[in-house]
Length: 182
Figure 1: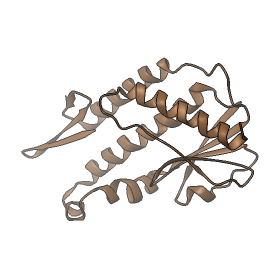
Figure 2 (figure 1 turned 90 degrees about the horizontal axis):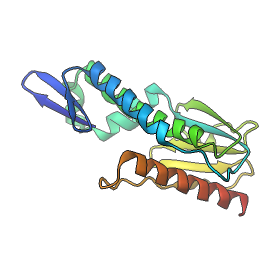
Figure 3 (figure 1 turned 180 degrees about the horizontal axis):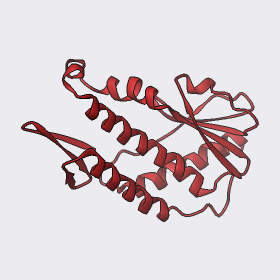
Figure 4 (figure 1 turned 180 degrees about the vertical axis):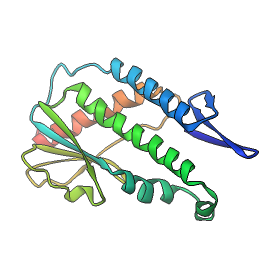
């Protein structure tokens, strides 16, 4: 995601495309996510069990993900519309990751919920695993009170988003197997 401020009117970039409005950029992001999600293949050897994927709520994204990344001197200079755009853009990216987990069908069922901070202690309920996004990245833990394991996210810009997503899903699979003792 790149945001370019030129003159008085911001322009919004998604990939190599530039848009005059945030709504057009977000619509394009949705189209790209749908296309990438269609490319995710189902697992031939699923882990099984039920998983709860906890991603930050809108307010949590804004407070602890977006504002924390911005220079504090810019907070008062950025419009509410621009903050809304950045928050929505990031949230959509993380929702895409959660949707990719569901699409891969590594687990029997996938429920997606929002957390308001402290996701490691999010109630796991009847689920076998909790996958969550925290300020430090993605993690997985099992219901047996095991420690959370990090799920690496490859940020190599030489790889396409779908390649990075596939690598994330492969690493998720390995970490789930580790938690199962396999």
